[in-house]
Amino acid sequence: MSRFPINWPKKLPMPEYKNLADVRAGELESLRVTMKKPDYGPDKIHPTAGAVVIGARKYLIAFNVNLDTSDVLIAKEIAKKIREKDGGLKGVKALGFMVDGRAQVSMNLVDYEKTNFDAAFYVVKKEAEKLGIKIKNSEIYGMIPLEALVKTAKDTFKADGFKSDQVLEKRLYE
Image (tube, rainbow, N blue to C red):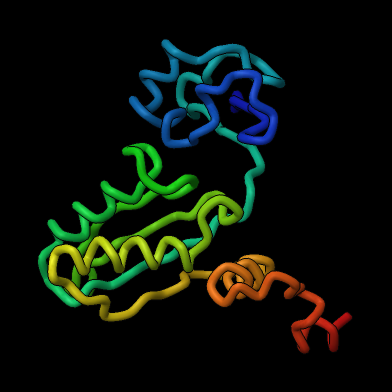
């Protein structure tokens, strides 16, 4: 199988490859036309197996906010306002979905150092309140780095000097 390896997104000789969604846009047919020479390996796509993108990125935090409404259009409207590509929060990808009868703003926070989950929650809450909607609950989906929690404590509670080595369990397991 031919590979399409680029050092995604840390080393970006080709900035158009920074966002994996942009690489995938248009699917394989588009990539056959737009593909530039990869960092390593052949610059031809395998005729039946396709292409593979190999890379490394910062931690991704999957974070969902469930609205107290069944109107999915509200979730989609909020998602459009907050996602980076539409002028919203830096490092936020967002979509609106219907999940278990509730509208959900589903987010991938691709750079929690720029926008952490507490900041994303606050903006979703503010946008929902403008529309007269309350937040039902939120969920962190999967694992997150300890530093994201430390950043939340610093940002939300103004605990400027707080460090991860002040977390009891972290110190016990060192």
